[in-house]
Length: 307
Image (cartoon, rainbow, N blue to C red):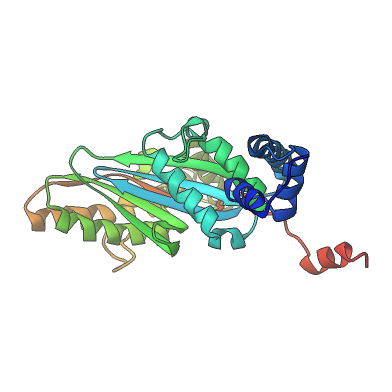
């Protein structure tokens, strides 16, 4: 039987992130062969990841990156907020975001892409689940780009550079200098983070959402008891108001609460003597739309203690 040294255990732990006892046991079962032990731990990690996959992952981090005229935002979820402070997890999100610059907006394509250390992103995700001990998932990706101008990033509640809770990208197309577009993009990014627009313009609002709003408006109008033609105008007015308040270009700028974002952009272009178009944007808020499990922490502790 091979002699298992402390150096062997240390090397295996560094390569896999496994605990000391798990590493020692794997080496013993592999008769000291580190490669066999690595495979065994990865297989065990895969089983661990599958076991954890039923847990709700609604925390984590949003990563953003801009390279030249292109930007990308990625949301990677975990079970608890503690993981967001883990340097290993932060490094994973940062590198995955960088890889996403070249893969497009499909999560499965990103997971199949090479990770910087030689594995695929998906394999690295599995290892991260096993070593950190929490379910994690790459939830969504969105890229934006311009042919000229700037893509400007803004991170709200940042925990590290380009990592945080609300990530925003603003795509400004135009022939205006970067020193004008950057501060404009930052201000619009702050607005987007705060105002939560649902689409760039009214035409981009979800048709099902508009249909629901129209039905609600019709019910309210019917309760008024007014003539049908008046009710129709009431419904149209309600829908117009909803669209204005939820489409980015028609929202009132949070800084002055009176100027529409479209007018803010137009004024900046006029002052600069050029053209600026707000072409697109991204707003990723961590965990939005994920239904979190409500747990009683005291009850969990009591249950674990057999009380």
